[in-house]
Structures are given as structure tokens and as C-alpha cells.
Length: 233
Length: 233
DNA sequence: CGTTAGTTTGATTTAAGTCAAGGTGCGTGG
DNA sequence: CCACGCACCTTGACTTAAATCAAACTAACG
Image (cartoon, rainbow over all chains, first blue to last red; front, top):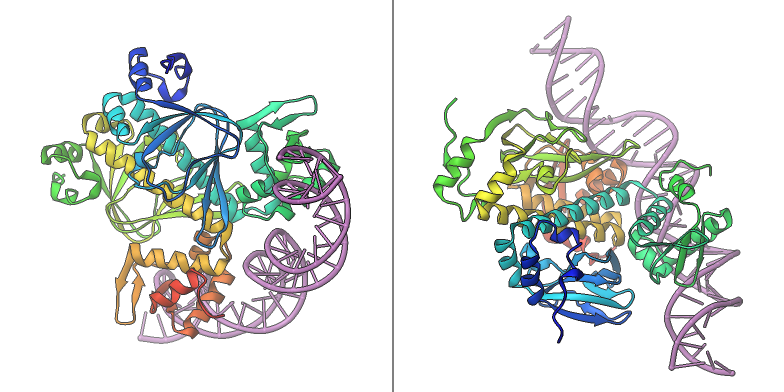
């Protein structure tokens, strides 16, 4: 196995403040793996033996309820940590992680988390900032779910996706991985039917273009008006 | 001003693993204050100059949306940190904190967070576990909002409140601070009318007793059946 | 080229919000 | 100490957003 090169990770926010030597130490302990589209990286409730960093690709984090409903907790993008349950004292993963496209992932055994945190304060710091940021985001989402209508939530979700995973095309900004109506429904707490109707009507109004597992935002400002409930009905 | 005694905080999970001397150092930097019922401890969007520990009482954390809707993010109970925005790299508070009853609060200037974290690894660790736990909780709440009906969410909210702030009485377990129908609505993303109707029907069924700003859970198991959607309609 | 996963759209139902009006317990000021 | 007023609570009637039910269409993949 060729050694992993530190250039893979040295630009990442997670590792700012670390010495090149530190990166090498960290990388030496990592295992890298590829996951094809739709492969499961880890399973909800499974023993949390590892934590992960997404080098390349997009990962869907999904919680399944006892009743069988699924909710997409978040999408993980290039350079982000995921499956960090162990870091916050959990024995098992609270959600499953599935590759939305072919992915390259670095993986470390859980017990190294504490080592890294102790040895590299900047790492501990950055990681804790990551968790903090996710808490903020998640709380914002609770507020959204509590106060906004489906239409606004779906518009907001699309805007966030374009920010995090948008790829400019001639028509506008396309979400850079395959995403179904069902996926969008699971992100926003609605049904695929409602999402389909919304996309149809937005397509008619010229805000988006969409097809099978594909959404392109044509008019961000227009969508933002919907998200903020400032548009003409 | 009399020095704060370390016995005030030494039993708290937040400080496990710290030496008595460490506690003294930490306490020496704290300012303690009392807040009467309904007093604002800090305001959303305000400059986050301090972080806080609730010694005694109950604090409501509330987010207000641009549209003026309010959502109760969480209740803080004895011994918990709050207003730790600075810890996760925020400049301003993302929510307001209001005393639900008369409260005693320890307060430190924000800049000490980094000092404490650097000087007392156990503190950094415990705090980071706290943030992690809140992330878990908040994500669970998103799932709830996305998949459960109002009835189940309200039942669940009451069960959580009794766990965190229940006081046994002859009738059952009473929530240990004044709480309105509106408050419960703001915790669960519904309206005071719907909460009122639910409480009325549960009172009739013998699951709860409630009055002005007061709720007592009489039959936890019964409520749990509702929360998990296992009850006879 | 057939099968299946994903999508669309119409019709109907329903959970919960909104609108409206009174009722009631409690703290305050006279 | 009492009564006045306000904050909180209840309940009925109606409306509506979004779910559910149902069916057909279509793109991609093997």
C-alpha cells in the first residue's frame, strides 16, 4: 500500500493549526477506502468502531425510526468528518451513512480519537467547532420545522444543497449528486408527492429545472423569496 | 463578597476528573448572580461576552424567528452549562435565555473558556461531551418533528420534562416550574389551542392533571403509549 | 425490450391550524 | 381585604395545508 500523501488533507479546515509532521502521524494511522454509489459505510445501531473523513464524494446520513420512517440528518461533503459518535461518547452509530456517489473515505479506529485530541489540541479544537456548528445547524432546522410550511422548508433545503454541493451549469446551479424526490422529502419532513408537486410548480415558474434524480436551481433569488415567504402567491 | 465554595459545583458531571484546586481556580473567576422569575439572562443576537452555569433553577432557551415565531430550544436544569455559544466559536448568542423560576447562575467571561479548556483537559472533554449530547438530542427532535404527529410530540415532551424536572407529588409527577400551554406549544411546534385540547382529553382519560401553568403526569406509562403511538384510539 | 425505480397528477381525506368567544385563577392596587 | 383586570385556559365552528389513496407515465438499466 502506498503511503497516503499529506497533501490529501492539509488544506482542510479540520487540520488548520497542525504541523505537517502531525498530519503524517494522523495519516499513518488512517485506512483509506472507496465506496461505490449507494454502498453503506456504516449502519445505524452498529458498534461505533471507527470515525471517518470524506475525502471525496457525498454521503447521506440517515436515521430510521422504530416505525420505519427515514429522515436524512445531513449530507456530508468533501473534507468533512462523519461518524464521530465515538467522539461524543456514544458506543453505537445513531444513524447510517450511505455513499450518494462513489466516495473515497479515510477511516480511523475509534480509540485514536482521544489520542489525537490529547496530542493535537488544534485537532480537538477544530473537531469541537465542527460539532458545535452542527448543533447550530440542527437547532436551526428544528426552528424551521416548527415554524415554517413545507414549501418554505423545501425551498430552503434546496438552497442549502446548492451552497454545499452546487455545480454551475449553463442552466444554473445543479446539485452535484443524484437526489430523488423521496430524498428531499426525507430531508424536510414531507412526502415525495408534495415535493414533486412543488418542483413541478417551480419548474413552471422558472425557478428550477429538474429531472430524474436531478435538480438544477435556475433562479436562486426566486427560491429564496419562497424560502423566506416573501413571494407573491 | 464571600468566596464561592467549591461544594457548589464539585458534584457536577461537568467537573468530574478535576482536582479540588482546579475547582477553586475556576470558581475564583466566576461571578454569581440571581435572576428572578421571567428575567432575561441573555438576549438573542447580543454579543456573547459570557458563558453560564445554572446552579439552581430552570432556564428556558428561546429562539425567535424573523417572523416573530418563538421556539423553545431547550430547558436548562440544575448543574448544566448554557450560553456556550462562545465555546463553539460564535460571536453572538443564537437564542435568548429566560429564568423560568428564580435562578442562581454562575457566569464567566467568554475568553476564559479557552483558558479552562487548555488548562483542564477534563473540562474540555466534559464540555465537548455536553455539546455532543445536545446534538444527539436535537437531532432526535428533528426526527420527531419530521415523522410524528402533534399528539405524540406533546406526550414525548411532557415525558422528557418529567424526567428532567419532575417533582413527585401525591397525584403523580409534577413539572417543577410554571409552564403554559403556549410554552408547550413552542417546544413542540404546535399551537396553544391544540395543546389545550390534548391536555383536556388526557385529563379526562386520567393520564395527567393540569391547571394554570402547571402539569402533573399521573400515568407515565399511559402517556408513553401515546408518545409511541401504541394506544387505542 | 421488458422491468423497475422514480416521477407526476388527480381526487379525497384528515390533522391541525385559525377564528371566535367565553371562562377562570391570580396578583395588584385601591 | 376585596374587586378589578390581565394572563391564561377552554371549547366550538370552520378552514386549509398537506397527507393519503390511486393510477398512470417514463427514463434508465440489465
